[in-house]
Length: 189
Image (cartoon, rainbow, N blue to C red):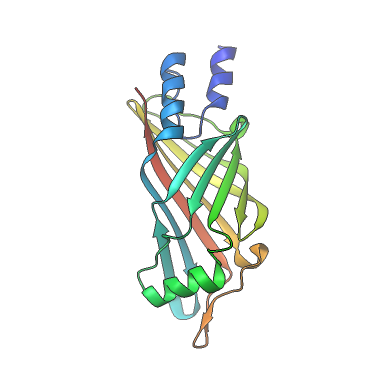
């Protein structure tokens, strides 16, 4: 039982659970090589109920031993308005200088649900954005359905903490706090 618990902690937060060590290992490899149904989004708000939503599906997973790393390429992040996207990428995020954002999570802080179950936890993580790395708390939920696992994580950042100028256009300024979420699915064999 101790070995199984150690294996679960070493699995990706979106990997499978205690069906068997072989199945668990296969799902962990699948999680790192081919996440599907990927979606990363942010929500920023401004005065008078203004909401700006942006999204991308450019999410990759990597295994660095004791750490799981989620990297999001920022070049394809869109809000649905071309001019706003251009300003976001060139003026605020400075994508040519800082092409991606990363989230690093210690494997030891993750829990994997049993088949048919769901878990939800707050875990300490680090985010690197705009050349700055800060600690954040990520709330994640993972649900196991058969041989696949669906994961969703959310956290909040303050743009100023990452050296990002708070966006303002024609006198309308966005609030500095932004909610970020990511979800994806991995399948085992």
